[in-house]
Amino acid sequence: MNFGFDDGQQALREAALTLLAAECDSSVVRRALEDPDAWRPLWKKIVELGWTSLGVPEECGGLGLGVVDLVGLAEVTGRWALPVPFLTTVGFAAPVLMAASPRSPALAAIATGAVVAVATGDVRWHGSTLSGTALQVADASRAEMIVAVGEGADGVCVVTVVSAQSSNVRIVPVSSVDQNRPLAEVHFDEVPCVDVVECQPQPGFDVARVVLAAELVGVAQRLLDMSVEHVSTRVQFDRPIGAFQAVKHRLVDTHVAIERARTLVYDAAMVHDEADTPVARRRHLASLAKAAASEAALLASRSAVQVHAAIAITWEHDVHLFSRRARHGAAALGDATTMYRRAARAYVEGDS
Image (cartoon, rainbow, N blue to C red):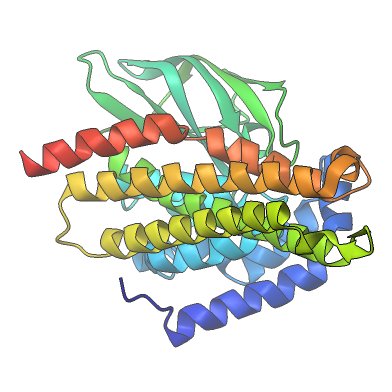
């Protein structure tokens, strides 16, 4: 595959690197772990820079850019363990809304900085109300709106948007391995709904998987960079530990896994931006990208812990900030095993 970011995409990535290097070092990430509102100033800057409008159609006030643009930015944010609801709003909610209702007012709200979460699970639409429970909803406790994906009376998938502040919506925080991506149970109790859309939102979730995979590649790369720096300076037996063959092999294996995942992510992103690509092929490549990125992130996490030894599991060291993000992302929207099976089914379907 011959892939390269164009000048505009590369400029976006470089601007993101500059901003996050100045505004999102580990002290900012740690502050967000302790203060539930510490993420808001950085979110405001991100909104002002137009990041939240990237994938939103122009007719909804966005920039109307493609999946490749989102992937390029998500990979950068992964390197900094960005503690704001960018992925869940721009990477998850916006693509699902685009698949369901490309002119939804919620897309315009996302472009201007509204935080939106996606809730799936045992959620059912009865006439004009929504009821049920969605488990493990990322950033629901921060959200202003929730995109609820459920089932209609006739078994057809439905998508609607509800206010997170509705008296009929109850959000119960639950434990999350990454406290900067908090999880919650969302309970819907006969929530009045308008603009309920019957659709197949899976194409939106496939885009979300590609964007999440890009973030995981960035997380894995940061963990590998930290490991390489450590083994280059940590000395045992009068030699840097990076000179030992066992350490070299481990880090090379991690590098290969990351490059494989990055290639699959970029390939999936380009295919999603091609309008004539069959749905089955998009699903196949999105699943492969998510599976490979999940594996790479978990391998990078294990390698970082092993080469850093005991300091890697201390609160004071930064490895755990990225290991938490890796484990959270690897499980979200389907783990590697689930994604490989899904990729196989999509491949057979595409060839049938």
